[in-house]
Image (cartoon, rainbow, N blue to C red):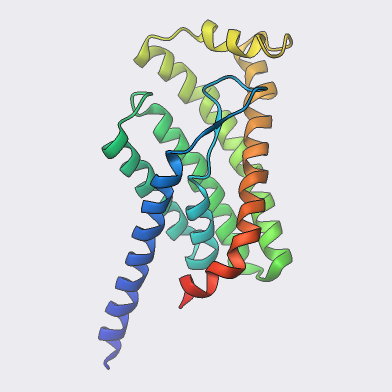
Length: 202
Protein backbone atom coordinates (compact mmCIF):
# COMPACT_ATOMS: atom_id res chain seq x y z
CA UNK A 1 0.00 0.00 0.00
CA UNK A 2 1.43 3.39 -1.02
CA UNK A 3 2.10 6.22 1.41
CA UNK A 4 -0.60 8.37 -0.19
CA UNK A 5 -3.15 5.59 0.23
CA UNK A 6 -2.16 5.17 3.86
CA UNK A 7 -2.47 8.91 4.46
CA UNK A 8 -5.93 9.00 2.88
CA UNK A 9 -7.01 6.01 4.96
CA UNK A 10 -5.66 7.65 8.12
CA UNK A 11 -7.47 10.94 7.38
CA UNK A 12 -10.72 9.10 6.67
CA UNK A 13 -10.34 7.16 9.90
CA UNK A 14 -9.84 10.42 11.84
CA UNK A 15 -12.83 12.07 10.17
CA UNK A 16 -15.07 9.11 11.03
CA UNK A 17 -14.00 9.26 14.68
CA UNK A 18 -14.57 13.02 14.82
CA UNK A 19 -18.02 12.66 13.23
CA UNK A 20 -18.99 9.90 15.66
CA UNK A 21 -17.86 11.89 18.69
CA UNK A 22 -19.64 15.01 17.41
CA UNK A 23 -22.89 13.05 17.02
CA UNK A 24 -22.46 11.69 20.55
CA UNK A 25 -21.85 15.24 21.79
CA UNK A 26 -25.17 16.32 20.26
CA UNK A 27 -27.01 13.43 21.91
CA UNK A 28 -25.52 14.31 25.31
CA UNK A 29 -26.57 17.95 24.85
CA UNK A 30 -30.21 16.81 24.94
CA UNK A 31 -29.85 15.79 28.59
CA UNK A 32 -29.47 18.74 30.94
CA UNK A 33 -29.56 18.73 34.73
CA UNK A 34 -30.79 21.89 36.51
CA UNK A 35 -29.20 22.62 39.87
CA UNK A 36 -31.16 24.22 42.74
CA UNK A 37 -28.34 26.56 43.74
CA UNK A 38 -27.93 28.11 40.27
CA UNK A 39 -30.40 30.04 38.07
CA UNK A 40 -32.58 27.74 35.92
CA UNK A 41 -30.75 28.58 32.68
CA UNK A 42 -27.46 27.25 34.08
CA UNK A 43 -27.72 23.49 33.63
CA UNK A 44 -25.09 20.77 33.79
CA UNK A 45 -24.67 18.62 30.69
CA UNK A 46 -21.95 16.34 29.33
CA UNK A 47 -21.99 17.58 25.73
CA UNK A 48 -18.32 18.60 26.01
CA UNK A 49 -17.28 15.12 27.20
CA UNK A 50 -16.74 13.57 23.70
CA UNK A 51 -14.75 16.63 22.62
CA UNK A 52 -12.55 16.46 25.72
CA UNK A 53 -11.91 12.74 25.27
CA UNK A 54 -11.25 13.38 21.59
CA UNK A 55 -8.75 16.13 22.37
CA UNK A 56 -6.75 13.78 24.59
CA UNK A 57 -6.86 10.83 22.19
CA UNK A 58 -6.78 12.53 18.79
CA UNK A 59 -5.21 15.90 19.46
CA UNK A 60 -6.31 19.34 20.69
CA UNK A 61 -7.70 20.61 17.38
CA UNK A 62 -9.70 17.43 16.85
CA UNK A 63 -11.40 18.20 20.16
CA UNK A 64 -12.19 21.74 19.01
CA UNK A 65 -13.69 20.44 15.75
CA UNK A 66 -15.82 17.92 17.68
CA UNK A 67 -17.10 20.74 19.89
CA UNK A 68 -17.89 22.88 16.82
CA UNK A 69 -19.72 20.11 14.98
CA UNK A 70 -21.64 19.12 18.11
CA UNK A 71 -22.90 22.69 18.53
CA UNK A 72 -23.78 22.98 14.84
CA UNK A 73 -25.76 19.74 14.98
CA UNK A 74 -27.68 21.04 17.97
CA UNK A 75 -28.58 24.27 16.15
CA UNK A 76 -29.56 22.44 12.95
CA UNK A 77 -31.62 19.73 14.65
CA UNK A 78 -32.95 21.33 17.82
CA UNK A 79 -32.66 25.01 17.01
CA UNK A 80 -31.33 27.69 19.35
CA UNK A 81 -33.11 29.26 22.30
CA UNK A 82 -30.56 32.08 22.51
CA UNK A 83 -30.47 33.31 18.93
CA UNK A 84 -27.18 31.49 18.41
CA UNK A 85 -25.39 33.60 21.04
CA UNK A 86 -25.33 30.88 23.69
CA UNK A 87 -24.20 28.30 21.14
CA UNK A 88 -21.27 30.50 20.12
CA UNK A 89 -20.23 30.93 23.75
CA UNK A 90 -20.65 27.20 24.41
CA UNK A 91 -18.31 26.44 21.51
CA UNK A 92 -15.68 28.95 22.63
CA UNK A 93 -15.74 27.60 26.18
CA UNK A 94 -15.59 23.95 25.08
CA UNK A 95 -12.85 24.67 22.53
CA UNK A 96 -10.78 26.42 25.19
CA UNK A 97 -11.00 23.38 27.45
CA UNK A 98 -10.18 20.94 24.64
CA UNK A 99 -7.31 22.85 23.04
CA UNK A 100 -5.70 23.60 26.42
CA UNK A 101 -6.06 20.09 27.82
CA UNK A 102 -5.14 18.39 24.54
CA UNK A 103 -2.02 20.53 24.06
CA UNK A 104 -0.73 19.87 27.58
CA UNK A 105 -1.48 16.15 27.32
CA UNK A 106 0.48 15.93 24.06
CA UNK A 107 3.52 17.21 25.92
CA UNK A 108 2.96 15.27 29.14
CA UNK A 109 1.34 11.85 28.84
CA UNK A 110 0.31 9.50 31.64
CA UNK A 111 -2.29 9.75 34.39
CA UNK A 112 -0.64 12.73 36.08
CA UNK A 113 -0.29 14.47 32.75
CA UNK A 114 -3.95 13.92 31.96
CA UNK A 115 -5.06 15.26 35.33
CA UNK A 116 -2.81 18.32 34.99
CA UNK A 117 -4.04 18.89 31.44
CA UNK A 118 -7.69 18.74 32.42
CA UNK A 119 -7.19 20.86 35.55
CA UNK A 120 -5.49 23.66 33.61
CA UNK A 121 -8.09 23.27 30.88
CA UNK A 122 -10.93 23.72 33.36
CA UNK A 123 -9.30 26.84 34.82
CA UNK A 124 -8.86 28.38 31.35
CA UNK A 125 -12.40 27.30 30.44
CA UNK A 126 -13.76 29.08 33.51
CA UNK A 127 -11.87 32.27 32.69
CA UNK A 128 -13.10 32.29 29.08
CA UNK A 129 -16.65 31.43 30.18
CA UNK A 130 -16.66 34.35 32.61
CA UNK A 131 -15.24 36.85 30.12
CA UNK A 132 -17.45 35.78 27.19
CA UNK A 133 -20.58 35.77 29.33
CA UNK A 134 -19.78 39.19 30.77
CA UNK A 135 -18.79 40.92 27.54
CA UNK A 136 -20.64 38.88 24.87
CA UNK A 137 -23.32 36.43 25.97
CA UNK A 138 -25.41 38.41 28.44
CA UNK A 139 -25.28 41.82 26.66
CA UNK A 140 -26.02 40.24 23.25
CA UNK A 141 -28.72 37.98 24.65
CA UNK A 142 -30.41 40.98 26.24
CA UNK A 143 -30.24 42.84 22.92
CA UNK A 144 -31.18 39.98 20.56
CA UNK A 145 -33.86 38.36 22.70
CA UNK A 146 -35.10 41.52 24.41
CA UNK A 147 -34.48 40.04 27.86
CA UNK A 148 -33.32 42.72 30.33
CA UNK A 149 -30.04 42.24 32.15
CA UNK A 150 -31.77 43.23 35.37
CA UNK A 151 -33.93 40.11 35.16
CA UNK A 152 -30.86 37.91 34.71
CA UNK A 153 -29.17 39.54 37.69
CA UNK A 154 -32.36 39.16 39.74
CA UNK A 155 -32.35 35.40 39.09
CA UNK A 156 -28.98 35.29 40.83
CA UNK A 157 -30.03 37.64 43.62
CA UNK A 158 -32.94 35.30 44.42
CA UNK A 159 -30.37 32.61 45.25
CA UNK A 160 -27.62 34.77 46.71
CA UNK A 161 -28.27 38.26 48.10
CA UNK A 162 -24.65 39.20 47.31
CA UNK A 163 -25.45 39.11 43.58
CA UNK A 164 -26.21 42.79 42.96
CA UNK A 165 -24.67 43.41 39.52
CA UNK A 166 -23.57 41.62 36.38
CA UNK A 167 -20.02 41.48 37.74
CA UNK A 168 -21.06 39.81 41.01
CA UNK A 169 -23.28 37.45 38.99
CA UNK A 170 -20.16 36.35 37.11
CA UNK A 171 -18.12 35.85 40.26
CA UNK A 172 -20.79 34.12 42.37
CA UNK A 173 -22.70 32.19 39.69
CA UNK A 174 -20.75 31.74 36.45
CA UNK A 175 -17.36 30.97 38.02
CA UNK A 176 -18.56 28.29 40.49
CA UNK A 177 -20.91 26.79 37.88
CA UNK A 178 -18.10 26.31 35.37
CA UNK A 179 -15.71 24.96 38.01
CA UNK A 180 -18.38 22.43 39.04
CA UNK A 181 -19.10 21.51 35.42
CA UNK A 182 -15.38 21.16 34.76
CA UNK A 183 -14.94 18.91 37.79
CA UNK A 184 -17.76 16.64 36.56
CA UNK A 185 -16.20 16.47 33.08
CA UNK A 186 -12.80 15.67 34.58
CA UNK A 187 -14.21 12.88 36.73
CA UNK A 188 -16.18 11.22 33.93
CA UNK A 189 -13.27 11.56 31.48
CA UNK A 190 -10.89 10.07 34.02
CA UNK A 191 -13.21 7.08 34.47
CA UNK A 192 -13.79 6.49 30.75
CA UNK A 193 -10.61 7.53 28.97
CA UNK A 194 -8.51 4.46 29.66
CA UNK A 195 -11.21 2.22 28.19
CA UNK A 196 -11.96 4.42 25.17
CA UNK A 197 -8.51 5.66 24.16
CA UNK A 198 -7.31 2.31 22.66
CA UNK A 199 -10.38 2.31 20.38
CA UNK A 200 -9.93 5.95 19.34
CA UNK A 201 -6.18 5.56 18.73
CA UNK A 202 -6.54 2.30 16.79
